[in-house]
Image (tube, rainbow, N blue to C red):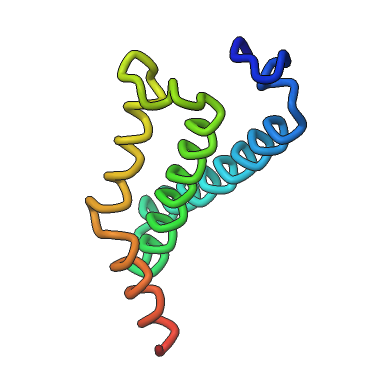
Length: 114
């Protein structure tokens, strides 16, 4: 809201609004998947494949969302004083621990018979 480029607030650019709209849509979709997965787990019905799909989708969405947001901060996004810098580092590691995205893809592909 405060950052300006070419004399205009970054928040006022159409691209910024579109990027944020896309990000919130993806985050909402990921949240629905996670909520469904929790309900399935509670009922004893969560399969390994479903868990892999949820983990893959949610962590990839997190990575894309934080990347989009960091882009809006420009060079400030890499400065430790800004929380986005830490969020960026934290988002990257979630695609590694608990099973890498590639391992999740392997589990999903195996369930497809390929």
